[in-house]
Amino acid sequence: MTPRIPCARPALAEEGPDVRAAIARVVDSGRFVLGPEVTAFEQEFAAASGAADAVGVGSGTDAIALILRALGIGPGDEVITTPISAAFTALAVLTVGARPVFADVDPTRLTIDPAAAAAAVTTRTRAILPVHLYGQPADMDGLMAVASRHHLAIVEDCCQAHLATCRGRPVGTMGVAGAFSFYPTKNLGALGDGGAVVTTDAALAARVRQLRNGGQSARYRHDLPGINSRLDEMQAAVLRAKLPYLAGWTVARRRLAASYRHALVDAPVTPLDEQDPGHVYHQFVVRTDRRDALQHHLLQRGIETLVHYPTPISLQPALATESPADCPQAALACGEVLSLPLSPSLSMTDLTDVTTAIGEFRER
Ligand SMILES: *Cc1c(COP(=O)(O)O)cnc(C)c1O
Image 1 (spheres, rainbow, N blue to C red):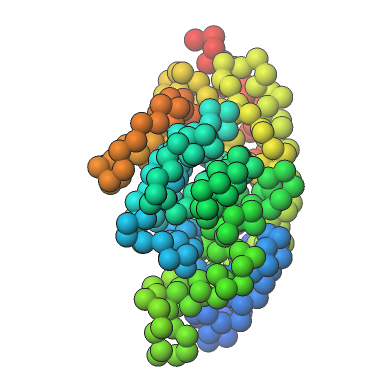
Image 2: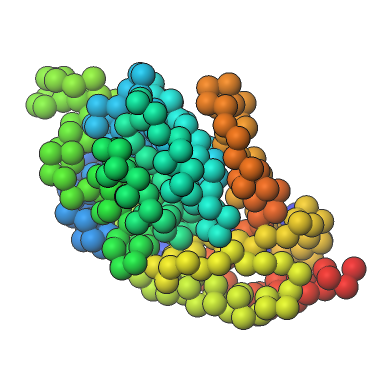
């Protein structure tokens, strides 16, 4: 049974006609990989993100891996990252042969705790990979202080944080580069996979551009051991059609989040604090020690919620043996977090249904 109120709605809405026209334009053009749509999208996305340059790639995971590769990070190197994220964040580190090292999260925003990051630094550490989780920027001031003290690069995972800012500075521009995903349910989503690297470092951008296309410096000349991770024309055209709506969608997400906060003041759940007004609410997350029962209660009323994430990445089988780590705050949070329905088109009626159903949970 499909839920009456889904957690996210990736279906086309107001932007539908623009997206369909964009697809038709690519179908008729005969250019399908690395053409004018990708070039134009790169310029438009860089401008929207406040970055000097953007490079379109195959996914958010590849965006992270390509930045690490371009920085020369590989076997023998360590990258400090967070235990609460899509596991793809840490898997990207593994794909370049480096080792992810998990630092526990700050309980107020569930992003890397700078003190834990500092404690995780070794002689092999090359970079810190924070995630702007749920659309809320990580504590970049704290992390940048740690990074500069130990001469580490900061690579920002911005996959949930399109247009987010940290004390006024755009995400992806504080570290050496930022990685974005355009997976269909992200705040800016393609009709398939896609990603981008943003950076203000022209040399790094050029290196990523070369690496995403087999390391070629010219056709059939492979100077670097690159990969195939090209954004295709179809997805670039779709993203160009949707990009002009992103600022409005972000305003809608913030408004809905404020409405949730207001309606949940006396509810038996605790919304995660907003530490920065630059939060773009990829998710609206609450905590409760009766999470599984609440999720079941809501689903019975046709309300879908999701858990981001049920397991710290440090405990995932693919990573636990690689990088054992004790992250008690992350473990506690993974047992308590619940993402409520949120998309720009969520109606106030549906939002009220959600908060009313949560209120009823207390009485049971
Ligand atoms: C979605 C996501 C990724 C992975 O992006 P893909 O495009 O699916 O590869 C990485 N990190 C975070 C925080 C994400 O939300």
